[in-house]
Image 1 (spheres, rainbow, N blue to C red):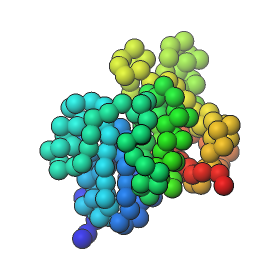
Image 2 (image 1 turned 90 degrees about the vertical axis):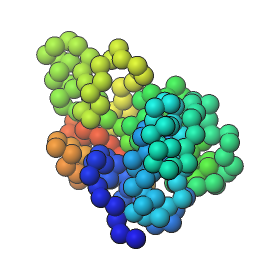
Image 3 (image 1 turned 60 degrees about the vertical axis):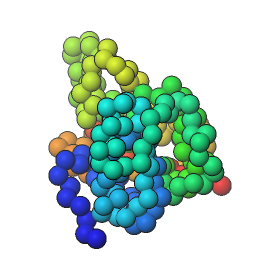
Length: 206
């Protein structure tokens, strides 16, 4: 089967899709309307499942013929036994979690690796915006005011790297998207200022 049309798929979701090998078992947490799952099932013949909090998102997934259940990620993944999946995806959902360490550990319990993406509040536009206006900036790729629900907790690329070190989580790969969603070279000087959206592949430390 040929690769599906990429129209309507966000650049960060396209980058995440490139991590996934044909035939994998994939769990997508906070899967939204299911566009990534549908893309992976059609284009890479994965076995895909999802969890989504919003009823609107679940209904959109059902209309796409996806296996998705409604659930709160902060309650964990107790319905799934160890090593149930090859990959678990957490796309643009990390800032909304009450206990991100617990969720990522759960992701790595039920799979061999996790893919995590988030908007970077360390971007230079955020820094200048806060300096010049004295107001909480909007993160690139996440144009949501601070007072709207669900409430996001700002984090940066450097925050996440430090978090992984502190929690004993191994970073295997990273992809950084910059201005106009162009891919930046990893580990370049000033990456925390230039990155709009960060994507990390993480695994367990053995």
